[in-house]
Image (tube, rainbow, N blue to C red; front, top):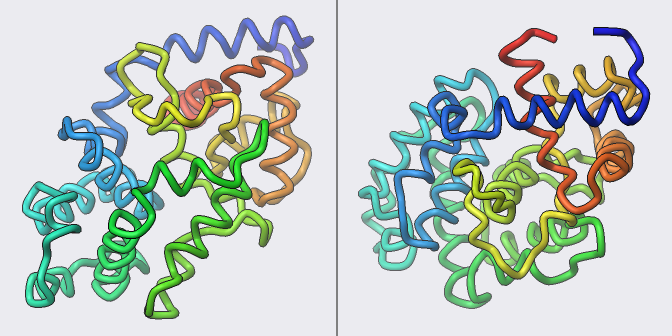
Amino acid sequence: MPKRLNKQELREFLDAKVIQYNNPRFIESDPIQVPHTFSKKEDIEIAGFLTATIAWGNRKSIINNAKRLMLLLDNSPYDFVMNHQEPDLEKLESFVHRTFNGLDCIQFIKSLKHIYTNHNGLESIFSKNTENNSLQKSIHEFKKVFFEIDHVSRTQKHVSDPLKNSAAKRINMFLRWMVRNDNSGVDFGIWQSLSPAQLSCPLDVHSGNVARKLGLLKRKQNDGKALLELDKALRKLDSSDPVKYDFALFGLGVFEGF
């Protein structure tokens, strides 16, 4: 493939890669398989949010640990969040994924209960403070609500804040799962109050490297400023669904070593 494609060639190349990777086969090797085991909206949301939260490092270990976490929640995440008693939380103390430990896990369950009890659920919070083509302010406000109850301060690092220049890769991935609905069977599209046009690409080492090679991104760090730069480039290719290109960038990086 030539080093630098013109805009039309680039769009055609990436659109073909989206079709290649954005299909049910993608689910088999991706953490999105964990929320796909549920059918109730709240179960999908909570399973998706918790899975996305621990989605860094080795993908196999992310998937295994997310499945283990669902078992600890009796495979009924919403019911567990809403109806757990204090003693029920003890079994979560043993949970660990990288730097996310049992204390963090328990805090997340308490914060999620607060959100569903007092703020009408996850979708309701993310639907506030939105901008035309960005949900980064929504993520910032979400973090404030998530930690407005008594909490362990160490847990704050596990919810990113884009207004502090974080690329917020995991929350942007979670939002892609919830909002995009292109009938390909991968993303859920269960949040009707938000539009795919508002989503940002989950920027990580793979998508960042591929984006730089394709001339979509110049900034070296994978931070909030890089996300804004990539957003602008992807919106020029498809303003109504820019994040579909996550499949292309990620697939090229992970499966093709592009």
